[in-house]
Image (cartoon, rainbow over all chains, first blue to last red; front, top):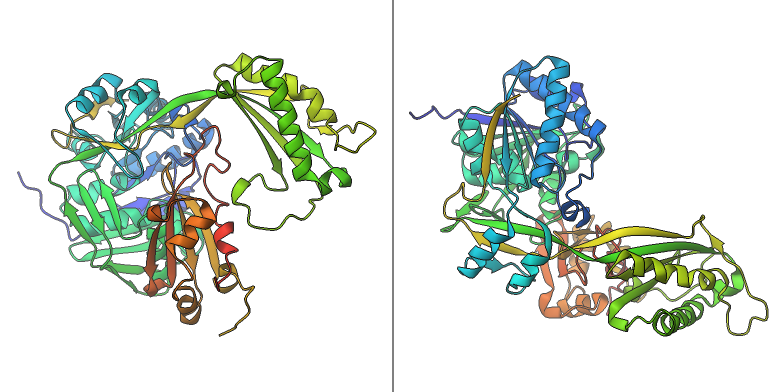
Length: 458
Length: 108
C-alpha cells in the first residue's frame, strides 16, 4: 500500500538537546504551525569521552523530564509522534533505557498512554572485530586503519543510526521513538523522508536545525520549525519575536562541521554547495538547491571510548607578584624537581605516569600555542594533573607533590613561600580518564543492520 | 587599505570562533562584516595552510581552508593535537582555540 505523499512535512525542533530547556508555549506555537512530529537529540560526543566510556548521561534527570513532559503532552494532544536520538548523551543501551524510564514516569504522571519504541545501537566488540576481520571497517580522516587491540580497549562502542531504523519503528506503530546514538540529522529527517520528501532538502533542513535555535538571530530564544516540500525547505523560529535570516541559516552549515558543504550520513552524502538561501519575510528563510548523493553501501560510523589512565588533581593559587613575574621559570623548576622526585622516590619510570602543570591565568588554555608575549599575570591557578595506570599511583604523585606545590621557591628566595591551596584535602582523585579511540565506519548489510528495535506499550 | 603591520585577522574580521567538529577535528570560522574585509582576508598569503600549520603546530597538508564569499566567511579545519577530553587535552570543546588564528598579523 502506498501512502499519499503530502505537500509538505513539518518538523518541530523544541531544543538543541533534550534537557537544555523548552517551554509549553513555544511547543504549542509549533503545533499551531502544523507540526507533523516533535524531534530532537539527546546528546553528542561534544562533551568528551567520559559520557560514553562510563555510559553516564551529561544531562540531569529533572531537566530531561521537564522537556519530555512538555513534548509528550503536546504530541499526545496533537496525535503526532515524538523522536529523541542519542539518548543519555552517548546513546549507549543504558542511555536509551534511562530515557525510557523517564518517559514511563512522565506518562504515568500525566495519564498518557503511548507506544514506545527503543532502538539500540550499542555494538559488541565481537561484532566490530568480526566485521574488521572481514575487511568491512574503514578509517575516517584523520584516523588510520583500526587495530583489533584498540577495539578490545573500548569500555563502550556505539554506532550512529541513520533514519531508516527510526522510520521502521514508526511504521511498526511507535508513537515515541527513543534511539541510541543517532546522527543529529537523522532524528529530524526521518519523518520527512518517510513521507516522501526529497532527500536533499530533508537532510539539509535537519542539519540546519539540529542545534535548535542556533540557526536563528537569537539562539537562546528557543527552538525552530522547518517545513520540507518537493522543492526545498522553509525554516522559522518558534518564538514570534525571534528571526531566521539567510545568513544565520547558511552559517549553521559551518557549526561543528569540518566541511561546510558536504556531510556524510549512513545512506549517503548531503551536498549544500548549490543551495540558495532567500528571506521569505523578516523571520522565515527558504532554502532550495540542496542535493543528496545516495551511497552504494550503507555505513555506520562507530564511536568508542577507552580508559586512558587514572588521574588526581590539585589546585593551588599564586598571588605573590615576584613569583608571578617569573612564572615560566618557576613552573619549569617545579616540574623538573617533581619529575626527579617522582622517579627517584616513588620509583616510577617516565612512561608510567605524566604530570601536567597548567598555569590558569597565564597560558593553560593554549599551552605551547600561546602567541602573546608574556606579561606578568595578576593571579595564577596552578592545576596539577597526575595521570597513571591506576588511581593509587596518580594520587601518590599528587600527595608527593603537595609540599612542593605549597612551598616551592624561586632560586634566589631565602624564605620558603607558601601558596594558596583551594581546599583541604589539596588533592582530588578524578577516577578514570577516557579517550575516544574510534574514528571508523562499518559497512552495513542493509539499512536496519546493527540496529535493534524493541516495541513496548508503556 | 591600511598598511598597519600590526593589524591582526581578528582586527579585520567581525568574529573569529573555534569549536570541536567531532572528537578528532577542530574548526575555525572567520566572519566578515563587509566585502572589503572579506577581500582583505582572502587575499594572497593571508590565510594559507602553511601559516595555519605553523600557528597550530600541525602539518599543512592536513589543513583544510574553505571560502564562502556569499556569506563572507572563511572556514579552516585542522586535526586536534590530542582527541577531545583525553588526558592531555586542554580544551574539550576547542572553544578557545581560535585565538592564535585571531592574533595572526594580516600582513605575513
